[in-house]
Length: 561
Ligand SMILES: Nc1ncnc2c1ncn2[C@@H]1O[C@H](COP(=O)(O)OP(=O)(O)OP(=O)(O)O)[C@@H](O)[C@H]1O
Ligand SMILES: [Mg+2]
Image (cartoon, rainbow, N blue to C red; front, side):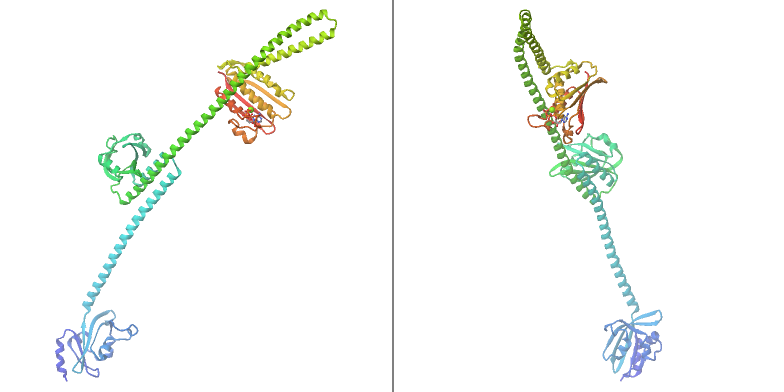
């Protein structure tokens, strides 16, 4: 048994010491205890100031559990960390230990407030620092992401705009202009060039803004270094004071020159050159430029293929047109030549027997005169005389037709000649009398015309075709009105019929070869095509107005010499 005086040993302890007997009565408080907690008499009351700080108990009991009560009542050694609330806003941390010694329970209260606070501050500091670091990391990641998504958005928008232009246009100059403009804006550039590669020599093909267009066509000479990076299809940024080596254009202060090779598969088609005051060239820009250059490369190849195809098409179309015209001319001259020869041959063949008939007719007339004196049958003589006179008229008519035919074809007159157009139309009317007789009334509104320098045989063909078309458009009876005039040194001929009118379906292709509504054997559809060619040869014009079931009028105008 230890007597109370023995406990004085504990007064040397820095920690507070409380000693209880087996009935949990306070038997000793060392000096440190009294200093810290005062003269504690009631253990239960004293314990109320404590609560667990770090508790090993389950959460359900935590509120009711008290560290001092635990220390007092524990049958074994006990230790815990507790909080001591001295006043409303004054707290201290204590490490409480209890153990048995010689039947007494020794409770030691070690003030660990400063240690705890330091530890906690340290912990808090570490935690905050960690938070700060991860926040900073997160911020950086976010900023990077924002920057890259911004760059991505700029790139996408730019690519979208450029793709749109490329899709909508096959015009190289339009495509280049839009691309250069976009790059000009993106880089806040001073100017942007596209130089074209022509057998390893570079020539300025396009420039933006257009105020610098005086350099278009200029040869751009690059340093060996730049040429190598172009060959290697690499983007190069270099400070410069001149457009390129051989250029006379100098900048007031050095600017950055960005060289972007424009390629298609293995070929370098050209180079984009951006002159900018921007000092820093970001990685994302290089990405954008590569995409722009590759899009541009495809677009240039596409557009030039398109231009080639277009040119080939145009050439083909012209060749086809020329072929058609030659064909019409060939057909026409063939038709005219064979018709002319035929007419000339027939005329000649008719002329010879006609000559003898005419001579015989004259002899017969003389004989009739002689017979008139000697023959008693006056009636017979009169009849023979009448027949002779009718024959004379018939011979005259045949002779006139033959003469008209010969004049109409005019085989030997292929040069320009002076002609009276009213007479030429009459000549043509003479030849188509069989079409008009008893069916169509011909009204002539002829003006006094000067002689016109023209190819009369050709113009006769025109009148003939238009008049025959007019006759064929009149089913039963009708009228053809021919008006001639001379205004502002131009000959005007109008041929109007009261026929069926021109079919709407062929109105816009009536002058094209092969357009016909007539049956095979009646029309070839070449008539008006040939007419148009002939009028063009005279530097004139041919047009028409037509109304269904009311009639048609063709109008020809020819400048007089
Ligand atoms: N005066 C007209 N009235 C109604 N239709 C006309 C008239 N003139 C021309 N046409 C229409 O235009 C078509 C083309 O005329 P075009 O003279 O070129 O050929 P075509 O008369 O048919 O044949 P071709 O002249 O070779 O004998 C005719 O088939 C006819 O349908
Ligand atoms: Mg015709």
